[in-house]
Image (cartoon, rainbow, N blue to C red; front, side, top):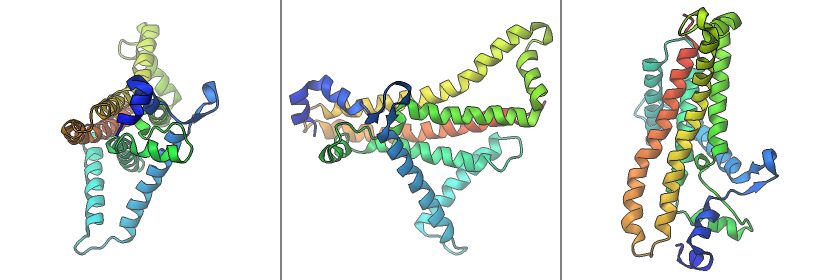
Length: 258
């Protein structure tokens, strides 16, 4: 509960404290250690769960773990079949990784806001932000990775000249080359920016609401936190789904050679 803590430092100080990352370095070289730690742990957990399910897979009646993994894989595979029009062995594994990793990032938002920071405090850490998707650096890192894949496949499928022609000759033809290039650059740059800001904005707002609820008296908190947590499950799943689907759509566009 937040009552004793925010009584000492004020509501504003409590909010700032919970949204401040554990970091080292200065300026451009600042590293958010909590974001890196939770991202690595959640990524390793994802690999372990799916690897274990694959090793224990049976053609008979599946267990709960195998059924869950198969359901997720079939769900992602169907999205790829419906959306991606090229041929690539990377897209389905990439879509699965993005969906699960972003979902697990977001799921950390459902932990009590004071639990893990309190554990970190007992270990001598002043700050601890536990939701990687509330860190703009993390969402931009993931979206820029997708953007680099878009550029790579655009050049690989269309060739350097084909990609350059697409940038300069569409949508209005070669006689509008400077204007076409400006429009295409804005369109391409908007892709990673929109991916990163959409995920960050939704999860940052969700985390902030949980923090505001934690500032209320203890007897009111369950009346608000439980319904918001139930609703937030939809939000964290939807944001992971949107990030995955847009990634598949963008890479499908990059694979179109016409």
